[in-house]
Length: 318
Image (cartoon, rainbow, N blue to C red; front, side):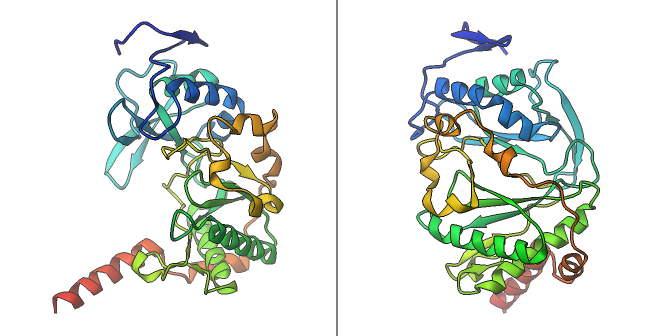
């Protein structure tokens, strides 16, 4: 794609317009984004490797948008994978961000957020159970933390271990590594069971209600990050005021942090050269049989919500 002469070149990638603001309210320039991603390239690439990648980009003066299909001008050296997208009924060609050079190319395209798939390549199973803990308001992070501890208790009682990170937005993500030959349907069932077990521990705080009007200002323990879903990567910046970063946090430190503590300006220094996401991540675990049995009896949230939405619509019309 034609453009201005580069401000500089790194790893064979021409970088342009580095001193322009990243987006309104970012408090950061494109150079800040590039420098941050370059500084964490080994750590974020380890999380992205071999996973079909969707990114959120922000063109100058435009709204953010999600890109799944790689653009026609993508360099030939960027590895890709083509997968059937059931939701849109078409093939989608995704990038695989497997090296620093590809990451720098994405950064130069103003790709701020990095959302890898839950599966590697065309593997039949996903690598983690993921609980996305979403508080009812942007200033309710402490509620998300309290719900995360419920999830941890549910994991302990199931004989499982997980790692936790800020989402970089208003919530928390809990990742539970599992054997990658676990069928996606089993992973989905186990995730549903864990979410409901966490909810039962404190139903006044946590809910698994998929429909927002049913949540009653509680923390949503979202068990729908399964199958073809994506989740923002550890170390990924977010298109949010101040450009925060999804940052790994130790369970014992979770109560003493806020999402705004970690931004493209501060996160790299906070790491001190370490990779806490890799260090805190347990080894892959087998999914307990009782968790599977329990989860298989729980309806799929999106399907249940679709039928309930139709029922409520009919009720309103009548």
